[in-house]
Length: 151
Image: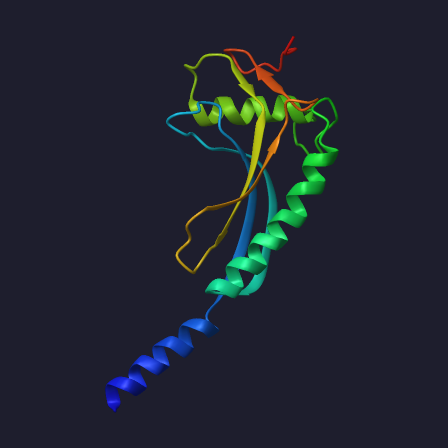
């Protein structure tokens, strides 16, 4: 009986656990092996429960943040609140260079991914949605991190 009560307590307690949901846009400049570079953070929403319900809620919140951001993304537009007054494309090239280090080839990005995680419920990143950027949102960076024309 005591074992049953202990198991019930663990089960009920884990469903009441709370976590923060974090959502980030990533690009993968390498392909294989994957090298995910963070290009935009959508913030954190708190009080998300652990377990399936929390994963579903977090994924929906992340998708609801990512899709309008991607749909409105203009790589030539100024990035809001950027301390260096960069445009989105230059900011992303800088992020890629910082993530890959100084020695890398030119990169072309055509896919943008949104990933989320429940920070205190295991903390593993999970893909939410991938959007194709080859129609007007293709990002090209040269070997030294400059935004260049993709043509």
